[in-house]
Structure formats: structure tokens, C-alpha cells
Picture 1 (cartoon, rainbow, N blue to C red):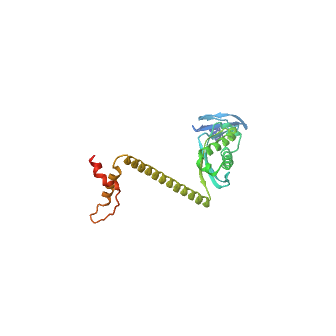
Picture 2 (picture 1 turned 180 degrees about the vertical axis):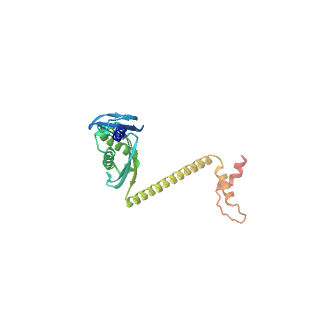
Picture 3 (picture 1 turned 135 degrees about the vertical axis):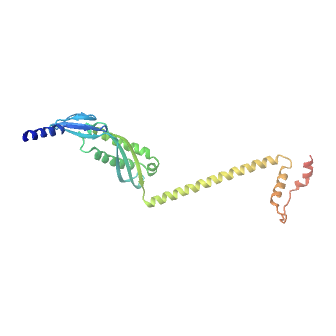
Amino acid sequence: MEFTVFLLIAVGIFILSGIKIVNQYERGVVLTLGKFSGVRQPGLRIVIPILQRMIRVDVRSTPIDVPKQEIMTRDNVPANVDAVVYLRVVDPAKAVLETTNYVYATSQFAQAALRDVAGNVDLDDLLAKRDEVSQQIKMNVDSETDKWGIDVENVKVQNIELPHDMKRAMAKQAEAERERRAVVISADGEKQAAQAVADAAAMLSKIPGGINIRTLQTLEKISVEPSQKTLVVLPTELTNLKDILNK
């Protein structure tokens, strides 16, 4: 009797060990006697214990941090650059059968691609054209990981660290550029003001007595204090101002 109970329990455990649950975000790669025999979709799945083995593969988008890589740009500037790679398994069978660890392998390819691409551009392009550099890295990594059933969805270059002396030089360059722009803006303003004054003078010169009236207005403004004495040499035309105003 005890043997029968033990046998029933053993059979029950054997049957239950063949019942597998595949989550919605997973796929199950089944090997029968070590040979690939199919991919199981999400849900309740049955495998034959001992004879079959199921390996779960996560098919969600997975971010991978690419550690800092010391690179030398095309214009011989040293820098430390890191990035993040977003990948997704599109062929679970290849991800299991073609590589021992697709996440680690993709990370290694991304590091190599980051060094290659960043080392073939100038520092200014690396700083100003991150999206283009990231896209080139994505293309390089994606072409290598396609044989593993991996789709590289996106690559983003994150931090670019420069030597301290280079940072100081760039800060001085930026300050000089700001000063140059300020001088240019100031010169443009003076040019426009001079042009406006010239236009006004030309217009006043066409009006009889216009310059003289403007001179009197200026005198009125600079002599608002009763105790203030102002010595002005009047042009000879002011002697005829009365005649001009009576016209």
C-alpha cells in the first residue's frame, strides 16, 4: 500500500514537472533530446520530462549600459564616452542556439562600435551630432546581432567626458565667441543709429530753418536749471530765423 502511494506521488510529480507556464512577455524554446523542436507561445504548455527541456526567452525591450570607453577622436582629442543600447529578441530560437549570452555579446559589439565610430569623427561633430553618431553605432551593432535574432531598437550616446584643460580651452573659446557677438551687435546698433541720425539730418536740411529749430530745441533741453549758464556760438543763419518763421 505504501509503495502504491509512493508510486502515485512520484507519477504526479513527474507529470506536474512537465507543465510549464510561459508568460506573455516570454517565448519558450524547446529542445527534445538536445535538438531544437520548436518555440512555445505564452500560456500553459506541456513538455515531456527528461526528454524535453524548455528555455524561456524574454522578448521585451531590454536596455544595456555600454560602459565608458576611452577613445581618441579624429582630431586627436582624448575623451571618455558611454552609451545605452535598447535591444529586443525577435527570433528566440536564434537567441538561444546561435550565442551563449546574447546580452553580453551585444554589449561587447556595442563597445567596439562606440570606439570605432567615435574615433572617426572630430570632437565638434561628436558633441554637436550625437544623434548621427548614435545612428551609425546602431547600424553597426544591428548588422552584427541580426544573425542572433536580435533587433537593436535604439542607441543613445550619453556622457562625453573631456580632459580638464580641454574644458577650460572650450570655455575660453565660448567666452571669446560671446564677446565677439556682443561687439558685432553693438557695432550694428551704432551703425543703425548713425544711419538714422544721417537720415534725420538730411531731412532737416531740406526744410528751411529746420537745423536752426533743432538747435534751439537742444538748447532748451540743456538749460533746464535757472542757475546754469551755457555759452553757445550760434550760427549766422539764426539771425534770419525771424524772417523764416514769418514766411
